[in-house]
Image (tube, rainbow, N blue to C red):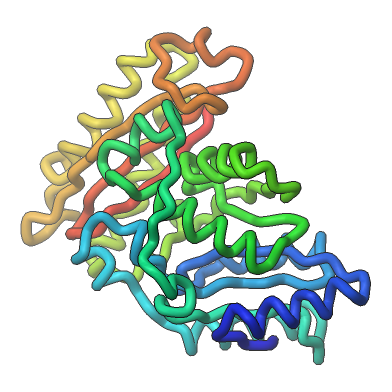
Length: 300
């Protein structure tokens, strides 16, 4: 693994690799790596000669200063995980480039860029996190400009973000293939997330109820209306602490922010299952647990 902290040094290394005919894949992350991130890196290495992994907590995509301050920063541990993975994939090589810039390096001047995504950002995360997707687009485009990858890799857990990135590619007309990778879950079903490390042991113990509820919702879809499924999910998680009081000490409870069932392509809410007959439907949820905001997705 090679580490880079400046844009200039990374661009030079990438240019050298490309001059040798090597292909380059990009895995943008905010660090605090877990097995989900590592699965993206593995996929990227399967399809490319060189993989650039960015480790950068992007401040302009946070609309909550407290959330930014609490976001895990584990650069040393992240680099150890990358090195271990690289040795598993290709022992003794330097095929993974870790890009670890400062905020000043990424944004040497005040950010004036702004992106809009129409209906894609008017649902779910959009209203809850104003400016979030524009901030994501700014940093992703800068990474695209620096690396000019052949392919870029994103996880399906951030399903709306994935749609936003695909739309960004259309807007800026870059010839980059966006590769969507499946959600990686813990053995108990909880979707892996950097924010999981902020959960207390008690909260972590009940967090798998999110995925369990979504899986039941997918089964209900075979015989229940869309609105009934949505209402059931919100009620089930909202009342979890009452039904399972012994598992929820100290007033611990789920606080569902939203659960939407949307067209898998347009992300627009559907009223009946036929509305998504061609593109398919997905259910997207955001839940607060123990002061930590968790998201998850289920396909119908």
